[in-house]
Length: 428
Image 1 (cartoon, rainbow, N blue to C red):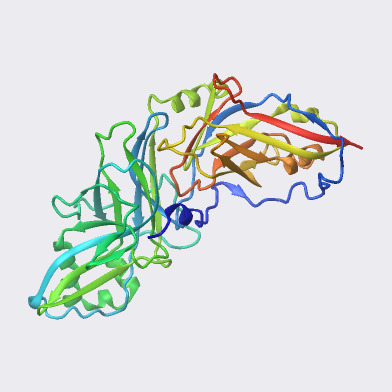
Image 2 (image 1 turned 90 degrees about the horizontal axis):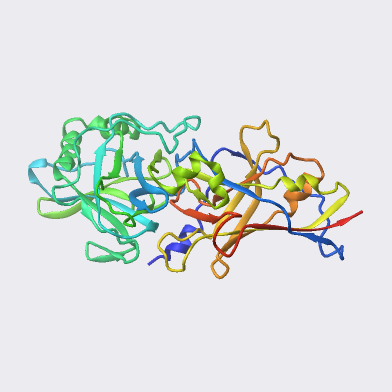
């Protein structure tokens, strides 16, 4: 069985609405070279959260499915939209009169989850329109594709308790953990009859995808309680185990036929956030509340840290260290754990629309309950006049394909630890 946390760290993630790192601060002198620096930690920090309106989720390294109700962030719900392809052209199912269908199963292989593994109700619908796979067509967390009204899940088979930890058993063999949703076998018959009466449908993947445009895979959990549920992570692009399979007998001989998902298939995740009557909604209505507590959340919120005092640093200095610590509110063992890393970005100028990655990965320390970010290059670039002091945004590393969320202490928190920037420099 795969170790889910290790797999998750292998996922390739790019934060939405950022440009490439411009290589800030390359001329910085090695801090070991200069000694007897001046250290200051008296900077005022202004903290709050901003909404991320558009996060591209098309063809990410994993997709999200499920829902959970967070006590601070509200309800998060995720839906998968994906295409399928043929494993080979012109399949021969044989005489339909000699076929007995045993089951029709949608399998999705887990690569992780976020939340609590309680029961959820899964639903599957065929798409009424195609997903566009052209590179210039983008799908975001708010994007959707029209779907037909008939739920493909077999009667009584949609209520499932997800198990991304233990191996699944398929045809008597243990395999890596999967979500296996049993579908109505009448939908499998549709494919078999179509192959028999209109074989041109299966003569190319283009023709097949025109006939079968893909699936919407979602959940319906209207009565989910606070603290219940999870967002499940699946690998569908590079994993042969994620597929749609007909299990049948042809003249008494057991057979299977797979409709595959691979890197040639377009997919995206739709994510909804209902923050009504939550502390997050209150902060977004009144940013001054961020001085007490502020937040970051994948697909939705970025934490903003502004440090106006950096403008008062002399321009004839070399920065040796600039260490930003961001304490979080988290108890070891709590289900909503902060991710292992955060990233930092900034606008190079106040007039910029987009944030630019600073190439900074802040590491989380469970012992200290905080993220530690090395801002040395960033502060030196401010001093050198290479960028304007517009503040930095801090985001979960897996911003577009996870459900991670973080509760940060503000500078006026009632908790013991407060965010702090410590800068050490030498004049010349």
